[in-house]
Length: 148
Image (tube, rainbow, N blue to C red; front, side, top):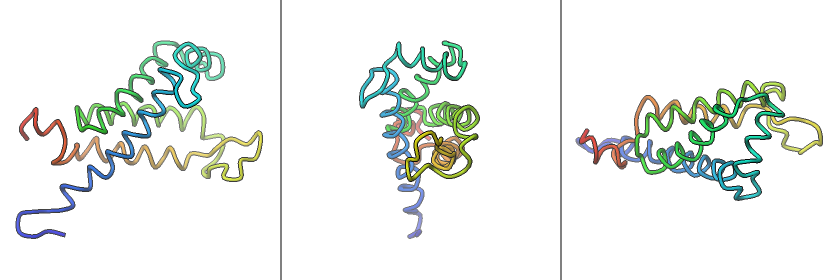
């Protein structure tokens, strides 16, 4: 919906993706980092990732940074492309290591013992890939800092 040189989609579209993606990842990152929202906290996350998924501690730390820090970056539009790249990497690993075996669909009926599929993670991956390519849009901190 363009009016002259003022394009509403350029202003709103990236922000409408940044806000929910940033909030989702800050929430999930705070579970891993601080133990908020029923999360395991830092020690529990390291143990869980290593024992259950065979993920070395350095990669667990990078995932936590990508989730919490990347969520903050995407939400505020600070280093948006780098933040979105970290989130995209976490989603690719989550799809491969956790959700691939569950198929495509979520376990919407919450059947015990059945894994969630990858549809939700795929949607989050798509949002992150969009921000990696398009950047944070007009209303982001990157624009103020880098004057682009």
